[in-house]
Image (cartoon, rainbow, N blue to C red; front, side):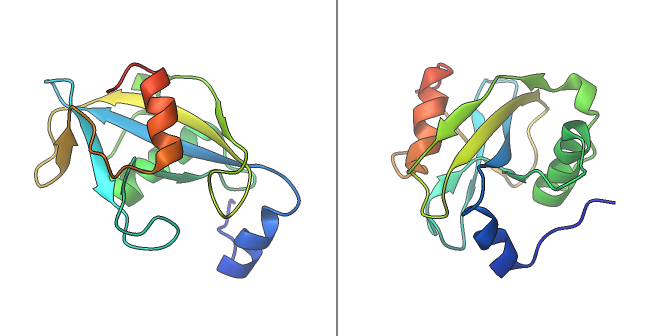
Length: 137
């Protein structure tokens, strides 16, 4: 069964290899993108995509489901998710090398969440880069 690392072990893991982050691109019917406000470092106070890191022995579909539940409190069938490829951050995150796997999800608007189009100026810079490559402005 997949388990999260302790924070010190998680941070140490970046010294040995890249980490895979799964980011959820949740669009409402108007095509606006759901963003969350980060409350911890790195990038505290910035807007960011809901998501997180793949755990050891966790299939990506299970990770997508876990993140939707953990970050958005929704149950999601990962079959409905559209995988948008892999993007890379070599030095844009102080923790280290990250491979980003954005996954697009169309849902009705989630009450109490913040949706944007255009994107806000204070979004995590490396997420802004791959979002712009995906056509978001």
